[in-house]
Length: 502
Image 1: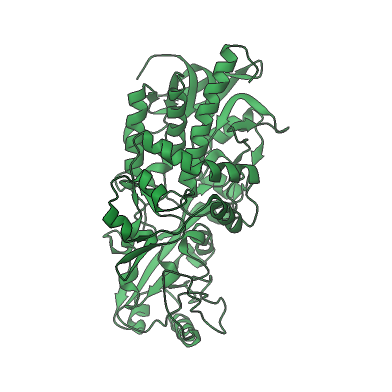
Image 2: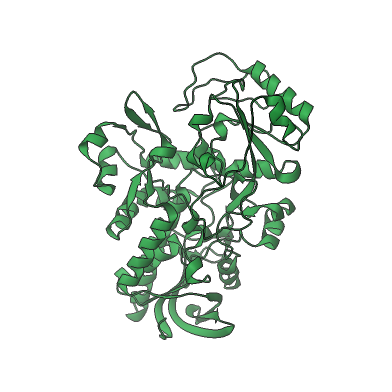
């Protein structure tokens, strides 16, 4: 740990967004300090826990190959890679947020996505094709779908290991066990940051600050107050340290509260998952995301969502809250042997909780549910399945008729044993409430004017995601706004040092 007490840029947080900011500021010649509230063993924020899928706009397989140069001609010839343009990305973002995403911020995310991911590669981040979760093999070719073909090598762990190594290589100082609690200003400009370290309070002089320390998803009281009382029961999928510190500091300086404070990214996760992210079991191993091939029933034996409404990429971030609304905050994903081999790899891990039986009657006997209603619902669903061609690589339109909710795609009768029930509950990933920034990542006050020297990135940026989000966008948003924040902070410090208006 350096003893330096004055920095050009102080970055609060040490996840993907924070380190992208730190690296960008350091590349611009700034002295940079990163403050990580966790220990070195628990560093990396929510980014450490991600599956590494990252959504960006691209033209074709050649754009992908620039990011994954080891992809051979032979391998590339077996890949069907649909274009995913900036227009596609923007439209996906607007579609899943009901048109609420702030256009300027959405455009910045989308338009800077490929340039930013190329910059990440230059800084050592390795990427690979997301074969297992985003492609299906058909007649010897891999068909990618859903605009999310790439993930970071060795998932979130690999991403964070690389970013930490790069930051250290560039000479960024990183303090662990260091919680930022207050920003101070002089003449309306950021001047210092108050840090608690081993029960001691110290003040670090700073010409600028980048807040990238997550939202408030790990704060039970704030979840209850902002999103709803039932959210006290949600499992925290990521770091325990995202308790709203950055938001509190920014709001204390007059930052404009922005975005969907009553909303969050949440998913269906294993009912027996840890209550907060377990750093000894990294990766997104407890999620249960093959539900479009299932039917989901609550304890009363009722279905409550259209499991096949869309590809998983576009529904998983909102279905967690639907599970949370169910009695006991639990639901059961039901599969038969027809689809069991198609399930994602997380269903095969030793951590996966499930019940198995040769008949549906035996399966239901093992579950703490209304058994008669459970069996009746499955029978009604089976009777409602229409004829058609079943194809999980596309929205196949193979649906049900006459039941509510319907199943719009991928409807197969549940009839071939053995049968499986995977119990799931709600896991919160991050809350959508944040502060307002502009496309330079400057934090804006109530008059939508920049607070001099204050920048934000990652989950702290409000106004991009509402109710839902396209999978892989959170990691990309963190990188885009992180890089932007670091670059903008450096530009601000330079202009301040030369007395040029920023």
